[in-house]
Amino acid sequence: MCGIVGYIGKKEKKEILLDGLQELEYRGYDSAGIAVVEGKSLQDFKAVGKLSHLRDKTRDYHSEGFGAAIGHTRWATHGKPTELNAHPHRGAYSYVVHNGIIENYQALKKELAATGVTFLSQTDTETIVHLFELYHSQSGDPFDAFRHTIGRLEGAYATLLVSEADPDAIFFAKNGSPMLIGFDGEEVYFASSDTPIIGRATDVYYLEDGEYGYVKDGTVHLYDAEGGKSFSTQALTTDKAMAQKDGYRFFMEKEIYEQSRVMGETMMGRVLEESIQFEELDGGLFEGINAIKICACGTSYHSAMASAYLFERIAKIRCDIEIASEFRYKEPLLTPDTLFITISQSGETADTLEALKMAKRAGLRSLSICNIDNSSIVRESDAAILTRAGIEKGVASTKAFATQTMVLWMLSLWIAQERSNAPAEMIAREIDAMLRTPKALVVTDLLHERIHRLSKRYLHGHGFFFIGRDLFFPLALEGALKLKEISYLHAEGYPAGEMKHGPIALADSELFTVALMPRSLLYDKVKSNVQELSARDATILAISPEPFELADDFIQTQYADHPMVEFFEMMVVTQLLALEISVRLGNDVDMPRNLAKSVTVE
Image (cartoon, rainbow, N blue to C red; front, side, top):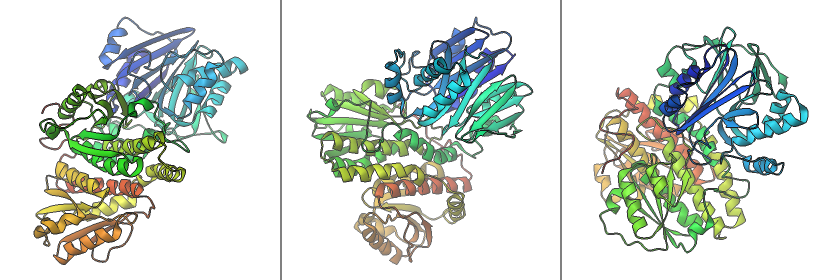
């Protein structure tokens, strides 16, 4: 999600930055920019869209001699993808680039505005450069000003700053977002991952959370909460493809592991101590609304199904779910008291986009849940909430599903707040569970190895049932979809209580049943349904915090007192199970046959 490149040295800097940013295109972006400081000369260039647009703008620019340079590819989270919102952001005499989200930027912005600062962008990042210049005006010491600036930031950030105040230095800090330092003699590089500096640097140091410092005269001065510290480098990999995957075998595997971090970014600035806040939404959007209709396809449809339980349970508002490809032809009844919500990872899903246009023609207000700003669905909607998942290269969606579901959960609580029908204790309980979700998404070595070993027993047979109740029925559908997408094995998701209404006829030893058995929601009911399948000799894989004596295989999850915490932990298990079965079958996990990442045709 976004990309940073930095360099300080004597080489031509424009090409180092542009080539480095090109190597980070896989992370996703909608604008890009660079800034170079040579002596007292500051230059910056920005462009919206592809990196080729930035190359066109810088065609006649060449840097000479020693200098510092920073570059950035931006994935919009605060503000539209425009040149004003693109990085680097400028103060009076300094530039900054930043990945992550500054959670307290609104308070900082208000504080800075009171001192006379004028903001040019809608971003959280711009607060960093203005805060730096405020502290510099007070102390006259650039590094002291940078240190005080970092001390004020809350949230996730990897940031580089250059300034006329010390033109021979680059200041850096890292907390929650990745950044590394590369070395080639006295030449020093910065990047969000290895790929931009492979072939340029020979050694690398991967910054830890809470570390910050500056580079000057070819020397890195590194600090943490304890003060100055020493560090050791390691040899830089030469494999760019593996570097993009951060050492994982597949992008899908990387994206499963990323979910814990990404979920934190989805919640930042939105899940507060006592309330949910969406700066994207105006309370008027819900004025006179008595029902919600959600339209989506595939994985997004499954997140919508899960959210229907939450909207009715938490927000006390009727919620109907529609498959977009069916909705368009059913002559639906659309009334003006209905809010029309569309969900799409890409924002270009053809069926969903056409359904949205139908709803708008009928006069309905619209809201989109999407991963990509300025996409067709976002532009067509009255309002939009971005999931902040970053680019998802694996065709089989993982972190997009997780972040969509989280946004919808937050939205259900936000509506309850707006309508004043949520007791304080309920809001506190939901927020507490949300804040525990990133931890539930952490993939441990023990869990992954357990699923890897189990997967060899599930390569044959005549199919899979994924079963669950309530919220876990949509998760069963999603688990089955993930498996069939990348393994090409037949799998179906069912409500556990529906087994005896027909599907149980298929039960025998060659039918694999993946049973989602949360302890916090209808455990005894689903246990009874699984017992019925076990009595017919079905092979049972139970996923639960509670050991199940009739299970052939058992994956133990953590005890949790909230169903959504269990939901997200079990989601990870089903994703890893699909991944490991697919790997054992020798399939291309990231590019499954017959599928495309963005479905732009009917």
